[in-house]
Image 1 (spheres, rainbow, N blue to C red):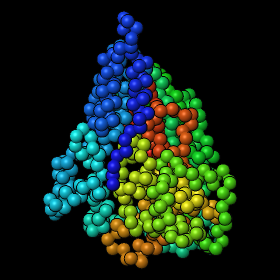
Image 2 (image 1 turned 180 degrees about the horizontal axis):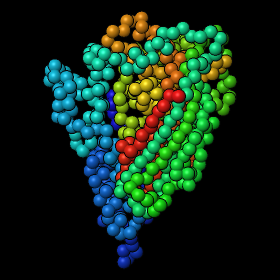
Image 3 (image 1 turned 90 degrees about the horizontal axis):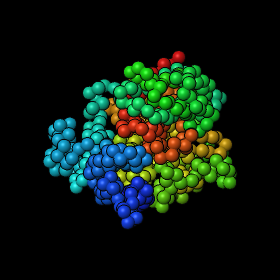
Image 4 (image 1 turned 180 degrees about the vertical axis):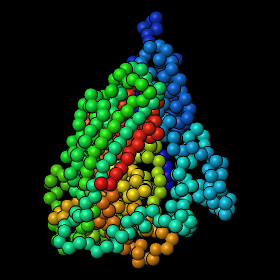
Length: 504
């Protein structure tokens, strides 16, 4: 449970190759490593030994030494490797004593034995680094999500159950007659703004930026990109018919004047409530040679169809062969056995751990991880499935979000939102019947408060940034590549990226 996979041996080979090419020749013609090369080699060894803090510090020292020597290529690589090491532990700020203190502060009624149990390998998210365990930043909230008594107590105090109270009127309403799956349109105007202080930017170099935008996709239509500024730096306008919505800009940093670098996008789209009414007997057979079928049933980087996933899928569905009923069994299995919880996405991406595998092995998963797990289990059975991403726009609760879709021949792409459905369990005063009805709604139906950016996880970014962008799983926020930057720009932008939503 909760084990951390070792970093690819390729990393060490690349480090060795970089050290060789950056080295110098002795008077006798034999290659001799520079002090910077030795620092980089030591850093790589520390990384392999799971000493991520030590590795980051050594890579940073190597960066400074390479810079002093004028070796900018090796310097950039050392800085990137330092950022990789930092990302492994960025989401793990607590050592054991600090984690215990955080738990006792939030749950003073727990005994020392109970706290120790909650921090065990089976019940916590932790990572081994520099000789000690470090615990996940959301350890306290995950304890609440995994304990209905605690979360219902919190909900009762606030007297508002998020999502359940906000969308229950949709879930409990009868489906309209003869309307088809898409109805009740809602129009959204959105402004996205990236305002980065100029003092954080180098004076030279080029910053490449990929900014998210809406796409046409089933329930989302009439997409209009109204403006992108500064227009002179646009290299690629968003393709609203693509699998992912992205505007691409290249900004010469020498052109940045004033106190801020500002990038602003404005767009409008229509979102519909989704309600599928499915007759299992009318589900048609798949065309298993169709390229789209092959694409959405294949194993992917994060929707990984592994032997463990195959075994679990068969265990869940038993002898059932109808794809609709199989998907339904998977949905209720996740609903009944895997409570919502936050997970360390940066660490998983950096370490190359598929999110679907992580959920299977640990029992932890948020909206994205649960959706990828659902999709992987479906794909294992030959059901095309994907994890669709963007934002949920429930008024007052707007935020990044993922949900799943699976494909039925004769019907199309069917939405599944395990995470929002689970909100029914958090309500302190809902009846069992109400909770069940609410969960039934989110298997095949979807509220209209959505902003869709990508049809699936791990959709290729265009133009290809190479390895400059380190977190590609989702593009709900901009992606940035900047070879002259010494800060982790993708993390830095979190404090400087805003989105304003208006329901027209």
